[in-house]
Amino acid sequence: MGNFDLLKAKGVSRRDFMKLVAATTAALGLPELFVPQAASALEQALKKPPVIWLEGMDCTGCTESAIATLNPSPAELVLDMLSIRYHETIMAGSGQTSEEAYQSALKENFVLIVEGACPAKEEYDRFCMVGGKPFRTTLIEAARKAQAIIAIGSCASEGAGIPGACASGAVGVGEILRTAGISTPLINLPCCPVKPTTLIGTIVYYLTYHKAPPLDSQNRPLAFYGTLLHDNCPRRGHFENGEFLTDWNDPLQKQYCLMLKGCKGPQTYTDCAQVWWNDNANFCINAGSPCSGCSEKSFYKEFSPLYAKQEMFKLPGIGQINADTVGAVIGGAAAVGLGAHLIATAASGRLSSKDHDRKEDM
Ligand code: SF4
Ligand code: SF4
Image (tube, rainbow, N blue to C red; front, side, top):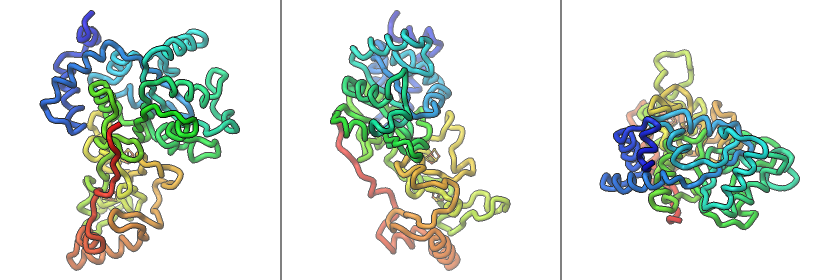
């Protein structure tokens, strides 16, 4: 069966396939001319590069997120096109059969996807044992042999999810690689859970170029984590006008800026405001929830309580400032006709995401 025939057999039309490739290349900021090249690379990928998908200290939310959305679905793309040889949640096999599948995939030129955090050292190993073995041992073994590693979700990326906030010694994959002296290329895709569009986009880029996309200093692809949420927020106009939501029950405040309700948008690099979740259905702030900063390594440990006003707040271009001061100063300035942007610009010369650090291609 030809490569594209495989997709057809799964009910994915050529049109759907090309639409997905076009959307992904656009999200990566690549020119339209690049679409045929990406499509051809992806069709070649139907030859099934093997993938080992390990789960450590996780809630399986990233798996759920990846397989529950888009048309064609990530299940078809990730499970059929990438040939996932080992995945504890979705594989049919169990026990000895799954261990054999894992051992056999280890002998190939595989890509390693990691979901969940990992105990940092031996004394914490008891918090995550899989198949009778410490997860840390399995991760180190697979990471040494993989051609590349994609750490998905906040837990695997920086140990920034709930396990990292508990007394379980949980860290992200990067920390395990550093302590074990492993230099396999690592791409971090934080968010709680990972966004399917981010995962698919990264996979398409990697299969096309055989290398990681341009990354920031936290190994996050700039295409998806290069802009500050606050700069693209639909409530930004209200922030500029000093209109902050303080009373959930006041219908007049419904669309106001959520900063005083704990929004971490000014400290969060993500494309959530541009590419919404669940087939573009919605995203947190538009649905009325403050951003909890799940794409940042400060998520949970430093950003919690997630939905309470932070006493000290970091605004780009200004630095640490008391949240009440922001509300009072911007509110007062708005009353005399000065916008927050103008105040921030006067205070610092800028109010943008230009200070986001960049790392060279791997
Ligand atoms: S603080 Fe949050 S709700 Fe307010 S403008 Fe910034 S990102 Fe939007
Ligand atoms: S808006 Fe914020 S909390 Fe919501 S998914 Fe995006 S980064 Fe996470």
